Length: 388
Image: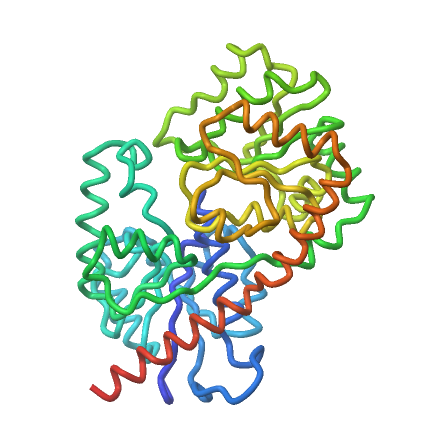
């Protein structure tokens, strides 16, 4: 692990953290597309190695094979949150010869870092609402830790312009704010076979005609609004919610299902195998993303890549990511959600137009785009540190 011309080190230990699928997907995909071999033209960082820090002895949320083709895997048993091993982690980072370290979340940044640090803030969901953070005490603690990390960070990235604006509001001292967009892996979603759809229907006992929502059960995901909308939709329309419970929050979804008399029309799937998730999307009549806040809104892009019409909350980040390819609906208006869903179900022509527009949006949202932006930023931070 001795450094030659130095290296870019990406901390992907979150890939071994249960429930952190969104962060893990983002960091592993960005790392897999941040190497020089996938880019055209002259690479200003030629000779600078890409390394990825992981906890290989723990179960991984996403396979490491894709990373290993582009980067040197640095294994460690030092897990996220092991503050008592901060000095040991700092020594490991120093031994890699890292010229810069990238951390995908402020709270997961090393307490001690012997090289410049770049960190991502995906959104300010918890800063905007104490309820989304799990209470005012937790919200205050998050802000204190984030401010401390940003004082050390040489640069901060975020995936959307909407989040950039929020970061500037909550953390005006953040330095070198840079847009590093997320993306969607086109191939598994665009090439779903009828066999895969049939297998997904059997495996998860999917309803014949359903609206799909993908996301953990957290307050800002706003799943309850879909239940209220479902109550006014035809009886042959069901709702499937894919996502785990979050132990930090009490979900109101089960109680709401009973209260509205929807027990036979709602399917809760805490987990779907990665290999079958594209088929679960493809089998849906509509994909709905009713979030009150988001950092990017990846399920909307996954639905577009799968060729399914999308209805999303009319909030800045989702309007930015989806453009005109999705129906935008006031997030707290169940009647508007029901109307938007029914328009798609009743008008095949409108649904087809949305699918075509969505395919164009998804085709542009490549992980290579974000990987290139991240690599260029990390190289510039490393170069500035060398010259200082």
